[in-house]
Length: 122
Image (cartoon, rainbow, N blue to C red; front, side):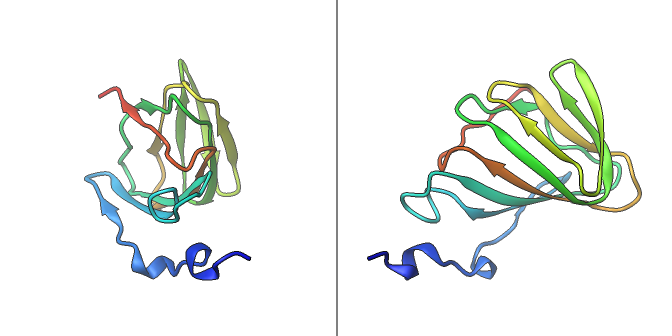
């Protein structure tokens, strides 16, 4: 039988990580929930800002836009994203998200590993 205290977590207990471009709040990963095989988080990117270009060598990422609009780099291409857009980023693809709108981007980000790795390129 599963110990529900190990799998049900109140996200208010987790602090936001704050950066000059916005915030990240991790909701699930192997550190927060031992044994988790996925990572889930909320990302906020403030108007006129962008997160650093990076890639994930050990997992793919799925990003779902809850609010805002922007441009997402995908290796050497750029795609426009807006509320309700979904983008799947395979492992190893260099990417980042720039907020080109006037409202804060809010996106749900999911990774296919509980211990996602990130390599920053800037």
